Length: 224
Length: 150
Image (cartoon, rainbow over all chains, first blue to last red; front, side, top):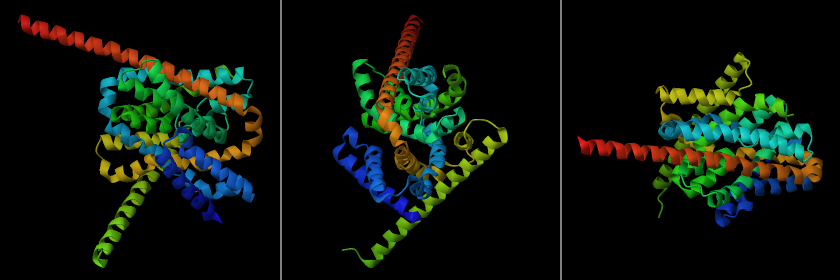
């Protein structure tokens, strides 16, 4: 029984990824389709999330080494950071602050509960770090994980529109938009635009995580 | 035609690269654990994986670890990161009630906030980039002019 969760997730993920590679349509994003299929499957077979997670947590455990592995793009591209450090640091501090402040204020404007508002705040950074930040500031990590995915998918739609209509020209800014706005899912999209954009996005994603980590514990209590 | 010999060497290659990747992931796993230990010892809210990231960066920078010792496993993890998100996001089903009643508000919040974040980040980065680019070309022009003068 324990292996069933992993095996079904792996097969489902593989099929959904192939589907996305074939059609390349935003709403066929592998996470989204995989989620829909798995939830339907669990609901139909009356398997509880708890049972599924007992097996699926083996995959979740891989998130920490994957986060550690982000040091690789950082190390490879440290020269890009050295040339454009001012662009990255200033825009990402402001971006991280904007993410925390706007999510909490909008959540309150929408009359969402305090717990939800706190769980939305760290949503624009990569999942493992977002879940950790959520835990630290008193949110619900699982809920944050879901918000991170929604952020990623909406960012992939909004990003290219933003670049076109706000007339963003530099590859650095394009990368920063995706890395700050929608983490890993955005970085995958940025690599579709170009190598430099993708690299800047992966750099921004890591720096954005640091900025959010530094800002969230002090900003969130002020706003809630 | 694939001879049994070729087939055997292909199998061996695959097995070797599989073992290499597993070992490299084990190194990264170990670094994440060390990071977790540091986080616990320092009593900070900074998650262990971040300490692990910084540790790996420093080890690479000071050439204690070679990039090729971890690159294949690490890049596999980064490439397939979406897979590791899946089990925890399936957790949304335990919040079915919440999503049914407040899903739309949550969606509006996230979409609007993401647009704001992208607008802020993009315009600031692009403006600084433009300003520095102008500054650089001015300096170059100045440099050229002084060279011509001398």
